[in-house]
Amino acid sequence: MAVQLDTPREILLVEAAHIRPMMGIDILESLPSAHIPYRLVDPFILVHEGDITITPQRAGFDTKHPHRGFDNLWYLIKGEASTGHSTGPGGAFERARLKAGSLLKIRTGRGVWHAEGLGEDELREGKAGTEFRGILFWVNLARKDKGAEPSAQVLSPGDMPVRQEGDAVVRVLVGEGSPVQLGTPGLILDVELPKGGAFSAQVPSGFNGFVYMLEGEAAVGANQRRASRADIAVLGQGQGLAVLDAQPGTRFLLMAAEPYGESPVFNGPYVD
Image (cartoon, rainbow, N blue to C red):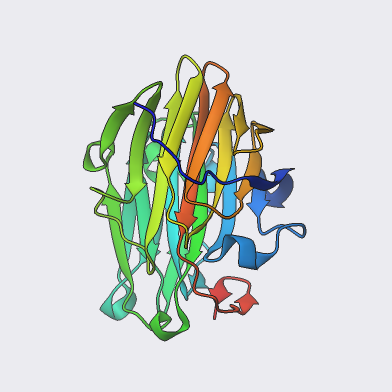
């Protein structure tokens, strides 16, 4: 059953992700964007998507690099992948293995080390040449929480609520029923419309938010702006999102959260 929206939000802008080369991989980057003011998407800092082939070169990318000051979430759309990171006292390294529908959340807090080793475990199992597709997003922490103790969570697909809502299959990455919490109240949904159709959801009026299109095409928002594969559609004011006239196979992420209203200082892998 569709959610009744009293004040559905309009879409302020729709922008295609741009290509950014990283580690020899062409990544789709929708945030940060020169055309999207941070105040409209606060607390979301970065959204990257990549289709990546497991190779010895990428699995051997073990150069340690630091992060701090944000929540780092990696959501696997298809395939299998693994990576490495440090958390906790002494900075002991941990490996995380993900399959399609899994989520890795690292609270970088006062600081962690990241050593990609992308696909290192799969390579040892003879899976060279296989591909995975993932979405990486950084969510800011409040300045008062920048010194938080680092932590990591790995969620399998069964750890996240899944429900049928009319035409849509909805997976809750962040929100009611999910064990993942951001530093601020938030909502992150993976919405699939296998046969097309419509979807609507309440999005609290105090939240910033956007839709990131993974597949297909649909009319988004009260003003029915068309958005398609790799587009980001930024939400205006209101209390909900309406998606209409979706093509069969349309899939998107709805990301929304209460902004901090702070101006973060971006310094490469640090967000202060």
